[in-house]
Length: 345
Image (cartoon, rainbow, N blue to C red; front, top):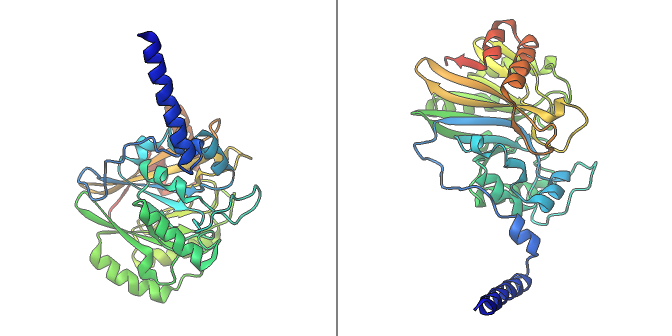
């Protein structure tokens, strides 16, 4: 009897191997590219009552090699439950061209294999900004392919287009409609006249308007004067909050006429390891409350777990926020240290 069971088990394994080998897809990819998360929470469900914002996300170069080796879900193993707690917006710093080529180390034309996108969606990412200096790394055709690939897995892309109307996404939480506008000053110039026209119609369709902007100087923890000037102009156009990315480190937080300006959320998933600062980031969660809207500040780190961000522990969080507060606008210091910034539009 035991021999019969062993024979049947061996036969089943043999048939399984033959199936894998004849399927045309390598065995490792069939196993490792499977998402580890349940993607049952679809856009529009009433359970989504917050928006999570993170900074730069790269799924190319060294990160692709690590995902090939350890699985497509590697970057999200410690953070997916937080991303899945609401809608999640990322700065998608790459292209997804039709013909993917592995991005060599120390090069900057970022190509992402679309096979890795389902795991990104399953981990909780719902929206991806393409308003950055890498969205066109493979030209106009690559940009179009990127939008199509993200759409195919259920991720809404916005930003990077020549028409500002294509750079806006609307997200509903707690009965409020939030408009998120993708902007880029690193490889583009803001057309304020056109943006003003778009903002007029946007405010009629939404309750709270956020500029999600690619700007600033890399690896500098304090904002540049040009960022402050741009922030003032955006506040004058009616934005209720400004959230930045591109410097690859967390920058200070400003306060302009009642509008919080998060100059940079830093890296979220990136293959940079040369300092602690590039391995730390800030996740924001936006919720509607009785007195307005609240941003919760949640520091993340990938120190010791490359390409795999996780929430900082309680002590590290407190230290991070106190340091960030000391580097930020005096009027916001106590709010930053507490991890909560309230905004009344």
